Image (tube, rainbow, N blue to C red; front, side, top):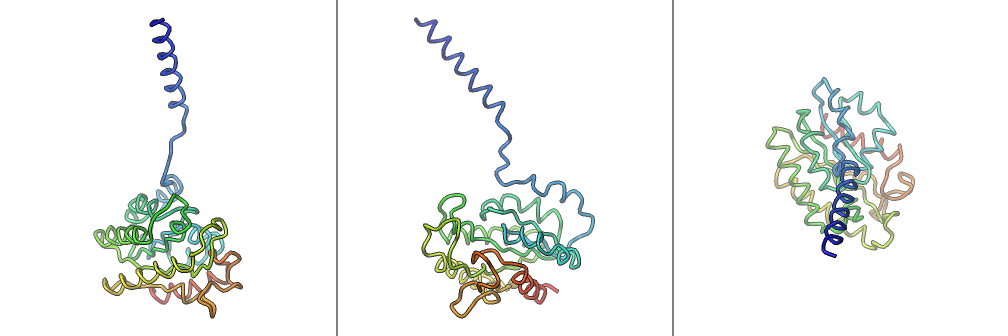
Length: 223
């Protein structure tokens, strides 16, 4: 009986070992997304735009804006601030830009990677600023798009309040540290302080008209 049990355990361990060997690498922070593009950068950029799907979609909708102004887009759809902190060195620091433009936090509020408080989301943004400053890169902080709701996470009912809270923390921190701020929340807002319906189809992601307003606001700050 003992031999049967030992043989069964050995077979189980072998099975687990085989499964583990077949598992693909879990590139949690998606370092691979920009690995090739990073290796091909030959000119020091004016700024790297770090973010999530809003930054990702920005380049897709208006690539000439990035090319004509010597900007690198390093947004990845779905990412939270923890992902961005992890890949900050490869996607930002290694390029030695003058500025890093940080637009992040809506996916934290959406709980894309599980619950995280606004305070801890803000802490991750601060960490990115500190890494940038330590590497002689000037942080430019952005207020979040003034989203009234999150279409893919309807259970969250206080999106507007959380966005407003994080935006206040970002602006106060920037003021204390003398960092530049691009106030997208004001640029894109309607009379109710929410994203204008003509600038976004889901209150989170700008359309091309929305991006054009954001471009104007950004270049006033970093030009």
